[in-house]
Structures are given as structure tokens and as C-alpha cells.
Amino acid sequence: MITIALSKGRLAEKALDLLEAAGYDVSAGREESRKLILEDEKTGLRFIMAKPADVPTYVEYGAADIGVVGKDTLLEEGRSLYEVIDLGFGACRMCVCGPASLKGKLDQIPNKRVASKYPNITRAYFEGTKKESVEIIKLNGSVELAPLIGLAEVIVDIVESGRTLKENGLDVLETVADISARVVVNRVSMKMKEAEIVPMLDALRKQVAIKNAQKAAEGK
Amino acid sequence: MGNYRFHTPDGVIDILPQEATVKRRIEADIRELFSSHGYSEVETPGIEYYDVYASEDFVATEDMFKLTDKDGRIISMRYDGTVPVARLAATLLKDEQPPLRLSYIEDMYRFKLSGGGKLREFSQAGVELLGLDNAEADAEVIALGIQSVLASGITDLQISIGQVDFFRGLVEEWGITSEEASELSTAIDQKDIVRIEQTAERIGLSDEAKEILDMISNRFGTYDVLDAFEEKVKNDTSRAALKNLREILDALKDYELLQYVSIDLGMLRSLDYYTGMIFKGFTYEIGFPILGGGRYNNVISTFGRKLEAVGFSVGINLILTALRRQDKLPEFVEVDAIVGYKDGEGMRQAAFATAKALRETGLKVIVDTQHLSEEELDAYAEARGIDQVVYVEEEDEVEEENT
Image (tube, rainbow over all chains, first blue to last red; front, side, top):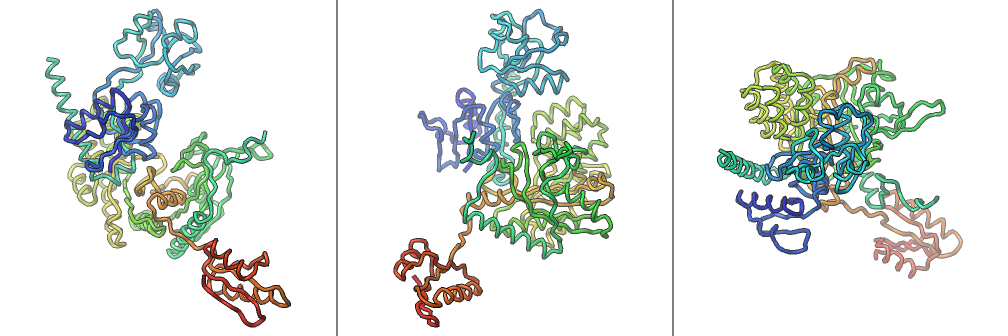
């Protein structure tokens, strides 16, 4: 039995599509119900529907063998996992954002206050990459409010289209990381269930390659 | 105040009857295994000076349980078995002729929930083989690792063996900086294919190098893996690492333990600590490695004695958890017999003598302290699942029955 932890919502749907295209029977995972564990004895697959931020935890502890989760969550949670495939979907960027007037002047503000839903990513970026101490203010949503109302100078958040930012008079100042959905595997499962997991990963990689090729062709 | 008095702090647990018995049995079996291979057990203190762990960055500051002594010096609780043994080998044991075979079974303390199984206090058993630098020594330690897990009753065991010199040789051959090497090794260790490819691209590695990186992440096996890499890799350091692994596999074949091992050259943890072979052990139903070890030739020299070393440690609590989840926890009878006696001259003395005689045959025996009658004694034994009841009525006549 292989247990797969999915991030409830759109990411789960796309992950199931991809598994199906790779030749797996995922009907159990699509069952319309409030059940959190969807198991299919016949196919040997069990899906758990979890909050995105919890997917890395399930996989690290081995409660799930495999997980599909956004890179943002992986960066924030910092779990000890194998991160094996970039699925390509759910693509966006983790950025430092603020008033457009701060463009190129970010380094000139001393003792910055940075608001974010992602305090660990924020700390790693400012302290690790930029070698700068900042005050991190953890928020749980509508982070764009913070610079508008004077709670923080800048924010670190996910940017997809950038529309919310524009409408609030904010702009991307720096890019922290590119984000997309990833397949993660528990370090022990990779060894103990190699015979089941490795072929699944190979099949998924093949599907991702096909998808990417299609995308490239459409782009031309 | 006082709201916590019914609880144990985060990361520590009570071990209850039965499980504690099993734990002690496992420890006894492993102790016997080590001893039968000529390893001498040592005890190091439960607390060490902080510098023992911190001065060479063996352990991150945040990971240690810290106290201060009366002079304000920082103390760390025992974080692992290896570093104290290294200190010992270079100080009190400095005149002992190598090779030295040392072992320990101790409780370890880690501040962050970083210990396997996320405990802050857990027992580890381990050996250190000091003063030898060859594949036989490496294989001896791996074999002891495998046997200590098997001795505990776990049958499904996978050992992955890597060699950090293999990657070091590639780094030299490709001429990349230490920052680039560190980023690459982290990505490889996490099997983060995306980051491996991006980093390789940025560094400007050749197609050949990229192919080797791909193989590191995807090739597992035994001799076949070594054959495949030997065809591709040119530099001496990496080739020596492959040769070392081949000799280790040969030795493990002679130990008749080859079926448990596979080669994984993508294990690249603690690169500044390990200097050669590294290995980890896995079993079902537990998401963390249950044992780990490797060669660390430069650690003891930081304490002033040049001494090569290889060792491993196995997590006893993790084994216990795995046994429980695999339904393999052996059941031990905690009490075999109860001896009661009729009130009267010399009866208690006779009961004690009877109990003593039974204990000498290896049974676990309780002597009744509640003056139970024969019927009450039978009922008590029945309720507690005690097999044998002995009731002393006459000084030299002992009535024995099985319930």
C-alpha cells in the first residue's frame, strides 16, 4: 500500500489528473465525500487529503510515503524529505513586495519590518541570502495591508498575476524563489518501498516531460 | 505554578512495564553482541563541556541541551556517543595501542526535536572502532549494525551505504568552489532533482558531469552500481571511494549479510564530519532511519590524537517503536509464580525458602504480603495471569499447583 498525501483543493485535482495520465487508477482519490482518507485495496493506493502546510509533516514522519505540495510550503516547513519531481503546475513566485517607490532602494532602509505568512522563508532570505537582520511580523492573510497601513515597510508573499498587488499600489521588489508543485518522498519509504515508488516516479516524470513539451509547442 | 506536575515535558516519555522490559532485553542482547566481538563498554558523563561539541561545529548550538556550572561555564547534556568517546580516546586512553574497540549504550539529549522519532531523550547503542583505516573495519561496523537490529527481532532491514569521498573527488575533478559543492551536495542529499539541474547549469558542468549527477540520484543496487560508476568516473579520489565500497561489499558477502545492503552514493550528510563510508538503516512502519554511522577520520585529531575511526549508533527507542508497529513486540511474563503461606510458626520462613528455590530455577516469584488464604491466592493469581501458585501449609510439605 502506497499512501499519498495531497494538498486539498486545486493542487490535489491536478496531481490526480497526472497520476491518472501516468496509468494509475485514482478513482478512490476522486470520491466525492468528506472522508479524509480515501483507500482502494485493489490498486494499493491510499490518498489522504491534508492542509497544504501539513503535507510535508505527514511525509517526513512516514505517515504518508509520497506527497504533492507547493514549493512555498516546503521552503517554509523545512522538513527532511526527498524532493524528487517538479510537476510544473501551480507556478508562481515568492517575492519581496512593497510600494513601487522602494524599487531598487530596498537595501537603503535600515531595521526593516517585513510582514509575511512565511516567517521562515522571510528569515532565510533576509538573514541567509541578504545577510541582513530584519523584524519579521507574522500575518495570516491579506498581507498586502501591512505596508499600506504602516505595519511593515515590505512584505514577502506569493505573486501569481500581480493583480492584487497593483490594485493596492504595490509592486514586486525582489524575487525570493520560483514556486511550483513538487513531489516529495519519505526517506525511508524510498528505500523500503522502492519497487513500487520508483516506477511511479518514473511514470510521473514521463507525464511531466510530455506536458512540458506540449506547453513549449503551444508557446511557439 | 504546579499545572505541569502531571505531565512530562515535550520530547520525553515514560516507558511502561512490558515495553521497558523489552527495551532492557534489547539493550542486553546488543551489549552481549558488542562484547562478543571484543568491544569494551565505556561510560561517559551525562554532561560535557559545551566546547566538546561546539568548538569544531560538530553540533549546532541550538541542538544542545545547555546548563551552566557554578563557575558560569556552559555545559551540554550528552548529545551523542561518538564525540565523548573521541575525547576519551585522545585523553585518558591516549596510551592505549590501536586498534581500540569501544562501545556504549547511553541516553542522549537533543534540544531540537531532531533525534529520530522526534524525541529529546532517547537511548542509543553504538560502537567506535579506532585506529584502523580499511574496508574490513568499515564492514565490521556495518555488520555489527545489521546484527544489532536483527538481534532485536526486526527482520525487514535495508542498509544504504554511501561514500563521501566519491563526491569529494568529483568536486576536485570539476573544479567547483566549496559554496557550489555545498549547494550541490545538499540538493543531492534531498534528491532535489530540480535544484541539482539548476545548480549544475549555473556552475556550467559538462554533459558528462550532469550524467553522473543523474546516476547518483537514480542508481541503487550493489556491484552493478559500482560497475556503472567505474566506467564513468576518471579521478583517483572517486575511484578509490568506489574501490573501498567494493571491498566493503566483498567483506559483507563473507559475513553473509549482503542481502541487507545497497549502495546509495547520494547520501551526502554531514560532509565536514564524515571522511569515507557512511551508512543508514531503515525498516517498515517508521519514517526515520533507525541506525546510522560512518568513517570520521578527522574527529579525534581535533582532540590532539591522530586516530582514524569508524562507528555507528542504533536508536533503541526507534527499534521499540518499529517492533510495536510491526506487531513484533515480544511479550514477557513479568511474574511466573506467587508463594503464599498459612499463618503459623515457621511458615513465612518456609515460604521465603520456597520462593528462593524457585527463583534459583529462573522463575520470577512474588511472596504474598497480604496474608491471603489459599482460595484468595488462587483468585489473585487467576486475575493477574500468574501461572503457578504455591501455598505453604506445613513446614516441610509444600503444596504446589498450576492454575
